[in-house]
Image (cartoon, rainbow, N blue to C red; front, side, top):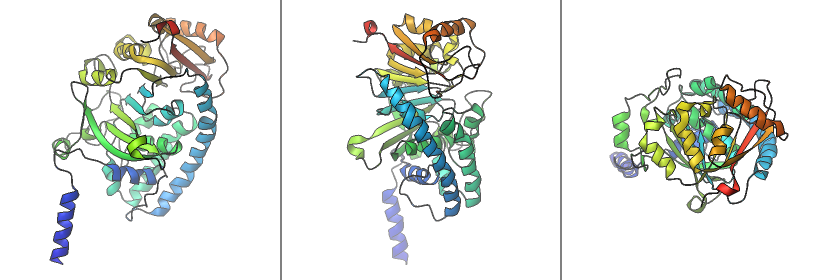
Length: 388
């Protein structure tokens, strides 16, 4: 008996990473993928009630199939038809919340996706100790907060905030549901931070020990404070198409908890250099509170205009005067009369002029306008302004 226990301890010690090695949370990611996103081959852990999981999955799968029919079946081919050949496969999605699902709908060819928003990624370890009673309530919360993304292609602020607290990591759960919808599966999960030179460092056991007692910082005074460590602010999720070889077909999604105002993102040298090192990109944004219309979000707006080739958005995208001055042309779809939220009157007027020649739009992409009309904007680099 002593030998058996000692052998087990030694085996576990050999499997545990050294204090300075990156921590990999792929085990938790795969369990969450099965339990929360209802996909993958991982068995439901013995400490959880499989009946609770199946009841959740029955409803979630119904919503997923509806999304696939409406968005993957209708919106994706339409969006693909708008793209010029040879676009980059690197995506930057500011104000993206938990919206990996729309990034993959808009850019199914993407190999590198970065989302940035006020929401923190979340601690995946709680799935190891969650009780069945806690799980039932937590899964109900996931269904409630993910409903907007799966039914309206939009997610309300209050739903994103609710995901900042609880037994399941809200943002990570949304990301895993996005993978499930599009037929992907997780390979590995790490947590990262940007160095001053733009490179990334992964969370180690030493880092976790030092930051475990430090709660994730509130990034906006009106936001809901997270209830987990700052160690789990930003994630790196590697994924593949189901059954694909991770060695040759791996893709990556990174999410950063980031206030994108000039006084925050504008002062974050590491994050700006991380984005700049990506080179040419494609972009998207939607339901972004018209922040790209505001002067104090000029740094992220200028980054997009300097590096992107193509962008899909609702009316919270880049106003025409900035886009045209940077060498872009814009094409409108659907109907637009006024911004859904109060915003710059002149930019509203510019958008109304742009939408006078808009083509029809059969689906919702982010916000509706003030008159509850569906609309979408494509911003592409004009041929004469093509990057060298």
